[in-house]
Length: 446
Figure (cartoon, rainbow, N blue to C red):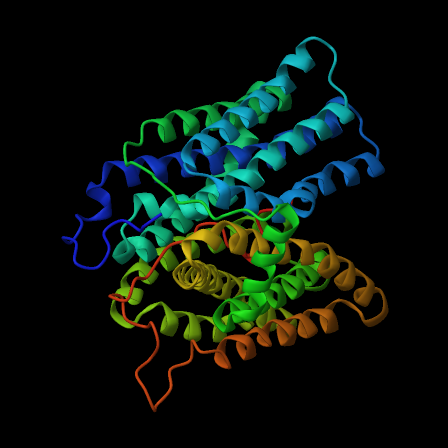
């Protein structure tokens, strides 16, 4: 599929005036907000109504990451075989809607149990994996190359809004409707997203890659991701960041409450500030990338990743000082994460040939999500032996290693020649689905 508005085409109108981009952005914002509601409503259903055991809750929680590990790589190969991606995306949203709506129905009929919730989570998770794989190449049909980084920032802004408003909305709905009926909000969000996607008019004619079999297709995506110097750097940085971010999250709540003595009610406020920082980051990234290029924004933003974790690990003093510093660093890192993720996705799409976009995106998503479990286990085990503060400082140092991946790659400008692919006019692009888990790590903390 040829990217729309290739070189030589007329300058496209601003994104805010493009109907199809508005539809796509609104669909994703509504869908993600509904998913945030379910992150609270479904576990509360299991705890309050089904009296789930700790082992059942652990299984229900783990179910969220199973589809990405089982089907993530294959979904990319499937996406690269499609002539049109939008029908598959709509079907995924409708399947998720149907699965979510069975929760309140089964509850009203007296049939709901933990196994039912696990099955629903598997269906929604599997549909989400395929949706993400199809969405990555589909964006090229809707957004012009010169506007994809700006569009990417817009998507990340919607994620930040959802991270702030979703839990609050979930709490209100659970209080007013009970937990199972609150899941209806997720079902309605999926349905609304499907209807908005169906209203998009931009024609899509993808030229699918020739398939040599599922396994060979998957291997080709893996090979491209690890042999292409820029993609390899992005992949290495993403895995490094997510591993140490998850290790940090494993001890974060214990450290905040038991070591820093932060009031539990204020932890939610600090989480909200990170989401607000994400909004600021989205606004700034769209403008900075136009002036300096995605490469330079990525190179600078990666330097700031350890700031918050390092500040948390070294923090002492009175409560007002702790809260002030945590609020400041949380807002800054929220902006930095969005800036990094936006440019990372844009560069990944730019550097990947159209026939491989689905598989490369699936490989990166698989890797950065698959490492989460390892990071969480490592953080918990190390804390048992070393204590909370040393583990947090180790995580800060570990995340700093991501700088090496980025700064030793071709993304770094060379004095002997002009900076490669750094200017906005050289086909910058968008990806909404390079899922740095650190973007949502705080949202998952109950």
